[in-house]
Length: 114
Image 1 (tube, rainbow, N blue to C red):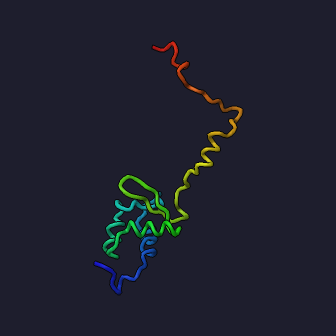
Image 2 (image 1 turned 135 degrees about the horizontal axis):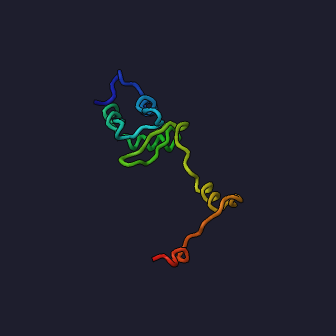
């Protein structure tokens, strides 16, 4: 189909509009394939949506998360908070609370069980 004079959205505007109009509450993002976004993008721009969305991610204009069958596209303010490795490491190595007891399982725990 390609872009015509009546189709004057930029790639960025198209992606933002798609996220806002195709998402279904309570979800804040859209699946690139199952929502129909990829096909609609190809029809409108006659371009590969994957390359364009990767560029928008690099520019910080959208956020993507890999999911089965594609990616989920989010507005930056709506993206899920990802676990940062440092915060996870801090949680693992941090001090235990007094009421929190860790049980270490190992070969000794299996003794006497047959």
